[in-house]
Amino acid sequence: MSGLSAPHFVGVGSARCGTTWVFKMLRLHPQVWLPWKEMHYFDSIDPETDTGYDIRNKAFRFGFSWRYALSRLASNTIPGASAITRRWFPLYSVHAPGYRWTARYLLGDATDEWYGSLFREGEQAGLRCGEITPGYFLLSPAGIERLARVLPNASAFLLLRDPIAWAWSDLCKRTIDRGDDPAKLATEELIARCAVPRGRTWADLGSNLSRWLRHFPRERLFIGFYDEIRSAPEPFFDRLCGFIGIDPLPEHQRGFFKERINSSARGLSMPAPVKRYAAEKYRGEAELMAKLVGGPAERWLANVEDVLKEPRT
Image 1 (tube, rainbow, N blue to C red):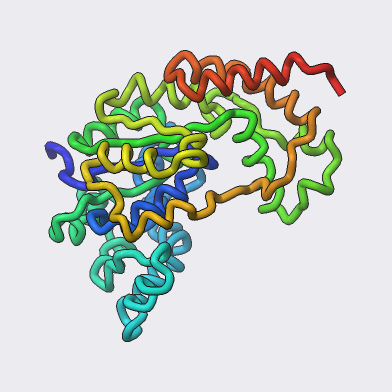
Image 2: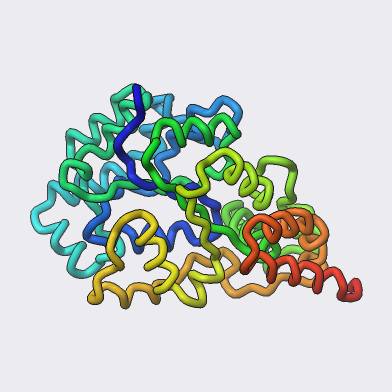
């Protein structure tokens, strides 16, 4: 097999860096076809990567996706549902693949051909097809090279973030997911729960970036920054659209750039001791990102250095 013709673009991460916001903006675009967020194909077939997903297992695939499938089938089946969603809830309006697509997704064997067939409807409609799975940021060198080989003409984009801010966002999300309130936890407990770089984890922002730069064609890789999404979302998204081969978002939809970016911290400030701990642990990742991509990453490194210069509390 010489490679798949679709999808045409893939968002590869990282988590907590604005991928959900980008997904919402892309599914507004009239030239884009997205089945849903997080297909988890390439991390499932990479024997060196464990993101907790294995869509090769059909039972797991059903448990993971039945809510997505049900909502899309309802949109196709209930009279007027699709039109109402597009009119009143455009950020939640998606291409509803329908019964055949759902059966193909749930019942097919997870092969490259199966994965490519999930974009067939969009490709036949002449749209740019894509998917966003932050778990791909953790792919092994062989996994990245396989993605590049299976999708020989596809572009990829990844998003990065200040590692201290990332660490706090990640800590808050995992704490809230466990049913705890980070505002009520002692500083020592927050530090104990803070994820730190270990080689190839979500926290290894610079190391994961370095691996993608080494094993994926650089001319096919777009690197964006969370800072851009927050401070200048329109020019950021216009650049991304140009990179993946679509026009800028139509004028009547550009008001949605004000859509709130997911915030796991919910306005809660990072305690100084936790910030210092994160700065100590993420200094190496910040240095690596600054060296590899510069720009905002150089400011992040400066922020780390500033935190480390502050007296201990």
